[in-house]
Image 1 (cartoon, rainbow, N blue to C red):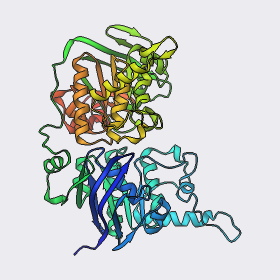
Image 2 (cartoon, rainbow, N blue to C red):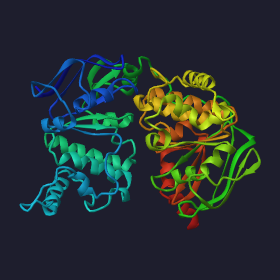
Image 3 (cartoon, helix red, strand yellow):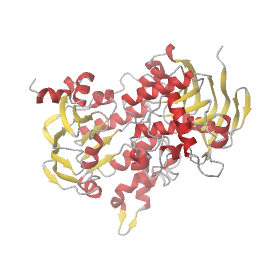
Amino acid sequence: MAEEILKMIDITKRFSGVTALCQVQFSCNKGEVHVLAGENGAGKSTILKMLAGIHQPDEGKIYFHGREICLKSPEHAQKMGIAMVFQELTLVGEMTVAENIYLNQEPVTKFGRVDKKEIRKRISSIMEKYEIHIDPDATVNTLPVAQQQMAEILKILVRDPELIILDEPTSALAKKEVKQLQKIMENLVKAGKTIIFISHRMEEVFELGDRITVFKDGTYIGTCNIKDITEEDLIRMMVGRSLENIFPPPICQVDRSQLVFEVQELSDFKNKLNEISFQVYKGEILGISGLQGHGQTELLNSISGLYRLKKGTFKINGEEVSVKHAGQAIEKGIALVPADRKSQGLMLELSCRHNLAVSSLKKRMKGFFIDRRAERDFTKDMVSRLSIKMENPELPVSSLSGGNQQKVVLGKELATEPKVILFDEPTRGIDVEAKREFYLIMHQLAAQGVAVIMNSSDMMEVMGMSSRVLVMYEGRISGILEKEELSEELLMQMAMGIERRKKEDGE
């Protein structure tokens, strides 16, 4: 029999009268990877924050190693042997990796100084044990996201926890980096650690997990062995019904006689983009694909006025438009749904109403004043239109689940009535049902004549949603594929520059 390390019984938690969890059960065994699944708002983050000592249950009991515990703070949880790697990075960008790892717990010499030699020794030992390779002297904000994620994991491993919570650790990682994380998780399990893991990527759930527990609307649905269920079974448990098609079909056919948006010879000062040209037609979703760091995000940021261009022109419905900054892009009808909703798309401490309304304030102005009634009506309409789940639009947007926060970002941009809308990793960190809702909205916008451009690191999403796919390699377009030409193999060849090199070599 497996040893039960954690048991949570009849856990209930309320926030401002709203029940986030209602008498849920959860347990995990020593040395397993236990996946926690459910839609955004199902209660996953709430129960994990209880284990991390951030929240305390209103009702119910928590047992760790068979002993009832009350986790009063994150520091208390870490002393008990429970640590959490959050979805949002908590590192200080201006400090080195080593300084971040031992922040507020630095070993000191007998003279009271920080013992840098001992810090290096301890970090090297942990990195060797778990096969994590990163420069401890590197400044965090100079590192790619994948290495920052590894630094976050190192930060908790030096405390030698027994139970490790990984909340969406792969959401910003490419496939190669996910494999590296998988190896680290395997080494942790071999060392007798227990992992609670959250991911909205189905393939990771089935590759990495041993058992899975599903929550829905704050209630416990069930626990299964991963090997005993299928993707269809899991989706049915999560959303309460079967999803025949994750990717809905287009609403209309692409009309190649109606050119909506055109980019010509776009290049930037940082040499991240070189001579980019493409077109988007009515009814079309143009997908952008490529390996991480080859200019996809820079392309969308340049179109939306966030990056200065060295040269290049844009045409919307045949009319050339000038975009020198983000405000001008919005005025011309270009909207961006950014990859990082928390740092780029939302003002987390302001209300949901304020976040939804901020980009389109001028539409509800009377002279120098905002028409509050019109703003309330607008908010109510957008919440209904996008099915945003919220208790009160006056609550901070930070109180919403990830999927509903993403809908607020989308609603804010839709309120500007864009002619071109750019989606950068639009479904990162949101559940399968919310993804489908996003996909339907994208098809609706395309059918209405809005130019829809989507960058995604999820190859299946790119293939499932795109009418055509523009593939990038080293800041250039290595190819554009029609729907019927799409295959994982060909996309990967183009993303690695293989097809382009063949053409250059005359093959």
